[in-house]
Length: 254
Image (cartoon, rainbow, N blue to C red):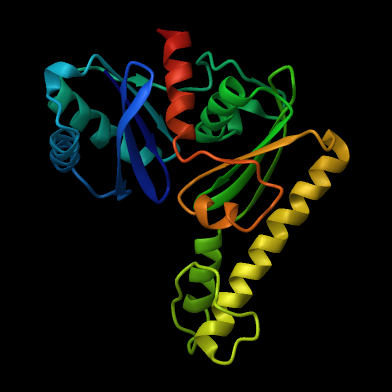
């Protein structure tokens, strides 16, 4: 079994592969001020939930965009599993050729997303990850990651709206019951949801003007399910995409 771990700005997601199948996944909040023992206990809980033992785990791969977490988390991994994990780096083989102006500055989670999507769905794809930020990553038919776009995440936008305006409440991210809102809470829900869905749809349309109408749109990320249901141009919602990418990268480098 392989454990694939992605350390993001908001969440740490953990996936367990039994051969090529994702057997279980687990999500915890990313916090910089945690000890290796705390992370170790959380990883131990993951094993318990997945009904596996340390001895069942053959190897581990980690992708991270939060350097401050890595020291404690890596030590927690070693304490629980007794394994030195493979750490995804800009020098890792990924099957993706990053042709952006500064390839080493690209988030490794974005590259892992692209590796998973290209391996499973082929090229001429736009890979959208709805996370703390929303990233758009274009991969052509030859596996070149040649274009990208970064925008504010929908939950980040909603949080900024409520935290920077003293009289506006926090809201849930969901499609409102009606567009003709009649109170502050509904007005915020409708404003955030429809602005975001419309923006995603417009960006996809603009990409298709350049890449062609046959470009497929693959989405992932925690809030991807909400958006996928309401943007007709999205072809696939794949919640396990980051894990699939890490598995592809692990196999290439191992």
